[in-house]
Length: 344
Image 1 (cartoon, one colour):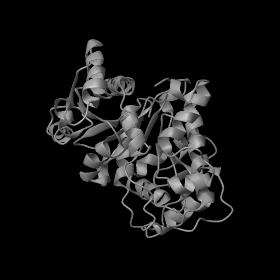
Image 2 (cartoon, helix red, strand yellow):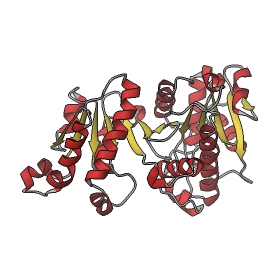
Image 3 (cartoon, helix red, strand yellow):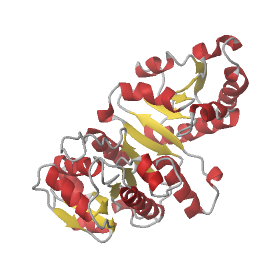
């Protein structure tokens, strides 16, 4: 990660509020309630009225402190919810409803935080859940956080999106997985299994985890087909696309093995044989991680010029407004961001 200002040693972490109609604001308020020391290290970017409502519905007694710039958090007392009101809704979003206004407010919060991080004003960005349908209704031409942040970073750097490849990593205490493709149809995901894409994923993953682990990671590559193709009997992608990428990565000095049978490689990684599994498409990699529990899962975007993490769950419209949403995954995401950024 590039450090761009002399102030990075005290740079705070920005947490975006997520979709105002979902549980994002509530889990943010709950997290600050459970971690009172965060008020001097983190702040929330979003709509002030939405976050005041979240503080109230989750139990009240959490003062909201309005700040004007990221560094204002350093002078705040503990046990408060610092809010930088970068967006403003004319009226509160209705809980549990897809709303274009809510989608726009969520997107504008993300854009503000990403641009501040790109200017070097933040140690990291942690994003609360957004609703993809609301985002689309707001006219945001990106299917999720990962693609949106990639586009913002590429624009800031003055390059095309293709020149800034990023990857999604889902992780918890037991398993890490990185995806070759993200939010595309399964049919398009199969077409994305190319030697170039797999090799790019291996390089991005190795760079990120070497920084995180302090050593070269042991990377396992999952096959695409049952039994990793069984020598070509069930498909030739392993032979023609995946294996050449593994061989090239090894030639570059990376500790890579595979392609492994996808129905057993995640189990082997969980027992400690590997540090991470490269999955060929979204559900192949996310189902094993999410099956182990959403409460401690963390989504990290690899390849951005700043640290970004997120909880491993969605907006949970059915829980919105109840005050019962579990903030554990958000807390894990902030903890991960603190660990990944030495300036936090």
